[in-house]
Length: 253
Image: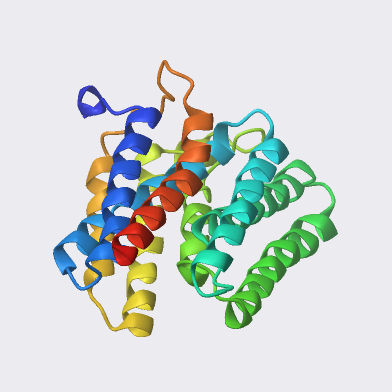
C-alpha cells in the first residue's frame, strides 16, 4: 500500500483547487447542476485534511494560523461587498477556528501527559480546557453562520486526535499516531458534516465529499519539492474575484 501513496501535499492541494474552481463556477453559473456541485464537494475535505497536516508539521504554528486568518478576513471583505453584505463566514475562517481548536487540543494533551505527577492538572484542568473549548465552539456556531458549521470545524481536529508529536507518551499510544487512523477519524467528521448539511439544505450532494477519502489514501505525507504555499494562500481570494468579475460582466452584457 505504501508504494501506491504517490500524491504529495502540493499535488493534493492542486487537485482540491481545481475541484474548488469547478464548485464555485457551478455555484455562480449553474447552481442547480447537481453533477458539478457534487464534484465540487470533494474540495473541502482535501483542504481540511491538509490544514490538519499543516498544524501537525508546521514549524511556526502562530504564523500559520495568522496567515490563514488574515486571508480569511480579506476574503470576508470581498464576500461582504459581492454577496449582498452577507456576514456568512468563509472557509478560511472555518480553517482558522479549526487550527485554534487543534492547538487547544495539543495544549490539553501536553498538560495531561507531560505533567502526569500533578493529578489536579492531569484529571481536571486538562479535560476542562478541551471540553470547555468544544462547548464554546458549539455555542458560537449557534449564533454565527460559519462555512460547514460545527462539524466542518471539528473534522480537522479529529484527524489530530492521535497526534502525539512533542508529547511524552508510551509506545502503545505512539502507535496510534498512524496515518490511516487519522484519515478514518477525519472521515467520521465528514459523515457528520454531510448529515448536518442534509439537515440544513435538504441535499444529499454533500455525501460525495466522502469520496475524497479515497484520494487521501494515496497521500505520502510529504509536501512536495516546490514551495507553493503562497500560491495556495492567494488562490482562494483571487479565484473568487475572477469568477465573480466574469459573472458580473456576463450579466451586464
